[in-house]
Amino acid sequence: MIEILSYLCISIGLMFWFWGTSHLVGQRSVLFKLHSLSISDTLGSIAIIVGLLLKIPSEWPLLILAILSLAIWNTMLGYVLAYCSSSRETRNEPAE
Image 1 (cartoon, rainbow, N blue to C red):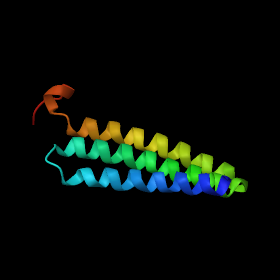
Image 2 (image 1 turned 90 degrees about the vertical axis):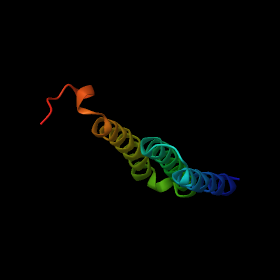
Image 3 (image 1 turned 135 degrees about the horizontal axis):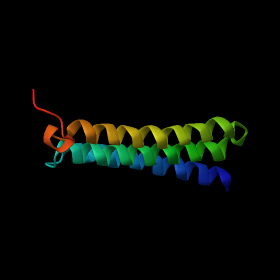
Image 4 (image 1 turned 60 degrees about the horizontal axis):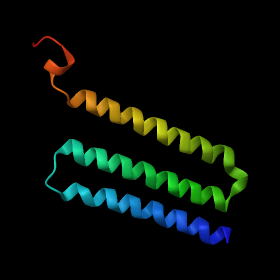
């Protein structure tokens, strides 16, 4: 039963990866594409790591660290991308 659940989590993770990638060909803005891609990649990667956690529970410290690192890294990257894409007037910086 654990084996089936493990493969199910890995399959769901792969579906999230492909779903996020499929939005890159749309007509939306680049920021919308990056946002949907980063969220789906994060969820997909976490689902794959949970599947691996079920498959090899002896490696749980490393896999939990990987989940936490993914969640923190992708959240911070989203904030950095949003800040860099905002205009100078929004950030109250003087023009050059």
